[in-house]
Image (cartoon, rainbow, N blue to C red; front, side, top):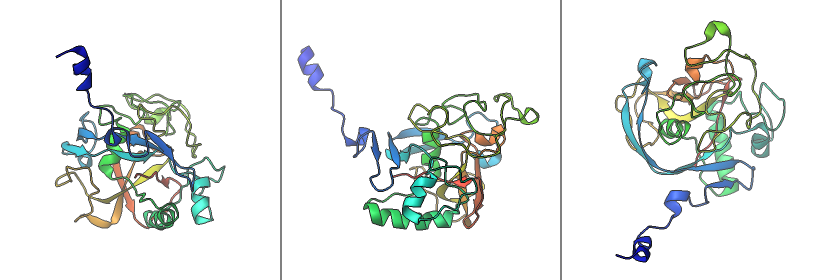
Length: 263
């Protein structure tokens, strides 16, 4: 086979690899920016063997590609759909909207999807962790690194709460703008810290029986409780690990609870 023929055998990139709207796109109605996360397989859970039983057992998940919000949904974006700002920290349009319940996010989605003609949704827990880990890499944090400090994420950096994998620094005690710090390798900002992010899944105490296809786990479990991921501005270093998971009541509101969307 000639060199020319060999080159002809290389498949061209298609929508499955780069997404139907390209590698990135912006929602016309709100200005929300989205990044394409290519599909693949990964080992989900406490791969560093340093977390809690809720992060186990480690299990294989295979996902199709999807879009995920480049940033946490902002107060300005929320206002364009809901005409009011419930946030505790009302410091500007580029700060994350928070003090938002899972139930209220569903109202936002209904209005947004009607206005946009698209089917935005909350990410599944598996999608969230896969994206935080830059496509399922074995990395400890949503920054793509195995150590973290308050100079690259918004979390509790007090000396008394330091871990072997964290650095001492500022404890800001409030949210910061969504584009703060550097993104991970996928172009996603603040996948560790700032606010806890709602996922679609019902809370389960561990991963026994979890879906292997990356879909949201919405059977059994405690349907009044929903998964949150990422840790927040007052969270300890161990809470902002990519594998860390927690829950909140679907009707709960707090200055640490916000979200980003998937498509």
